[in-house]
Amino acid sequence: MTGMLTIAGLGPGDAALITPEVAAALADATDVVGYAPYVARVAAREGLVRHASDNRQELQRAAEAMRLAAEGRRVVVVSSGDPGVFAMASAVFEALESSPQWQGLVIRVLPGVTAMLAAAARAGAPLGIALYNPRSASRPEGFARALEVLNEAGCGDRITIFAHAVTTADERIDALPLRDARPDMADMRTLVIVGNSTTRRAGRWIYAPRRAS
Amino acid sequence: MTGMLTIAGLGPGDAALITPEVAAALADATDVVGYAPYVARVAAREGLVRHASDNRQELQRAAEAMRLAAEGRRVVVVSSGDPGVFAMASAVFEALESSPQWQGLVIRVLPGVTAMLAAAARAGAPLGIALYNPRSASRPEGFARALEVLNEAGCGDRITIFAHAVTTADERIDALPLRDARPDMADMRTLVIVGNSTTRRAGRWIYAPRRAS
Image 1: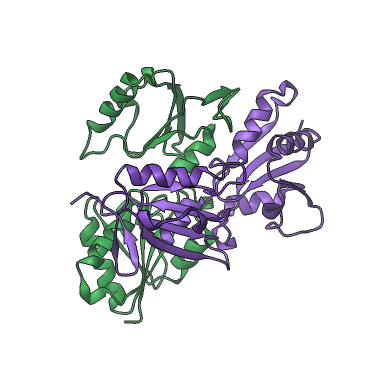
Image 2: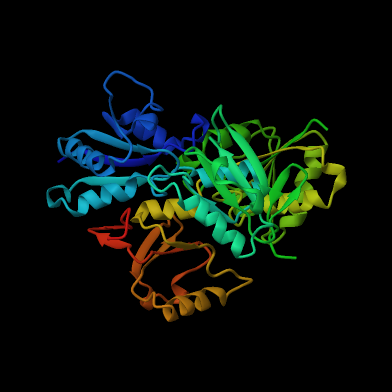
């Protein structure tokens, strides 16, 4: 086995947020594997095979990537954002654990800018709780329940940021008190940040002071 | 006012983790402002003034940066990692809130790869809780107390990762059960990740499965 399996994060959308480390791995790859919209973010070029798959095919996708790497190819598994935040790194290690024949593969994980950080940067410095993929197709009720729980816990005043498609042409950032947040304000491209108890507005910015005052 | 104030994250240490967006801001800057070790990561060049300050000078540093930007300069305030994670973005907005004369400044926040993501990538995909700056000079007792609380809460078995100086030449990654973790295993360049209840080893990797099994 002389192949290499790289698990890389493409950042939230804007190519200017792809790290040079990830760009170099993509430039050197023979194969890119991932969910179709993420694979589409890697430009086609001679010598590169792009393997696009449907969502919720993570384990099969991971096994396919390991099989290719075991044949000696230089494979990059791509995720949006960071590969360790609700993305492909876990699936690859899960597939690896159940596949003794691939234990010898050279594997590396390359971090990326996760949507939480990009969304927080657009808003200012709000910190707080981040909710990824709040309107997941497989768990549509989770976000409504999270809003209920937070409201019941007395967090209705907290500034809540809906960051849609951050760093892409479709970006839209809205902020409102948690009590006014509704589940249908989010879709699958939205990241929600719930500020902490000190998070507040300063002009167009939303930030959490360094120490509670 | 025609200046520009950019608050940027340099990533955890390796230049290959500085986003192209941040690199472009640094290339265009007239002034770089920040804690001395971070300013030192920006190469000197003609036309660039580097303003290095001591730690815990955040508010003065933020005010100095705004003053320079108000004079029409292109100022980049640099932090390690991401500027919104225990870094300079909050301090700038705090200074801005108390300084009406600077409300008109053009400000932007550029995200970076935070140490949590780089440390998690080195280990695999462990998720869990991340503790930044566990041995803070101003709060040295906090980490010992956190370990106590987690042990008392029944988390002694959890895999705990000490990631020292991640992505630099001094990088060292250690992992052990939380019950064996000692406060003096961390210093100011260490990030600690406490795995969740499902986090486990797969060969040299540490990962949390996508769903609890």
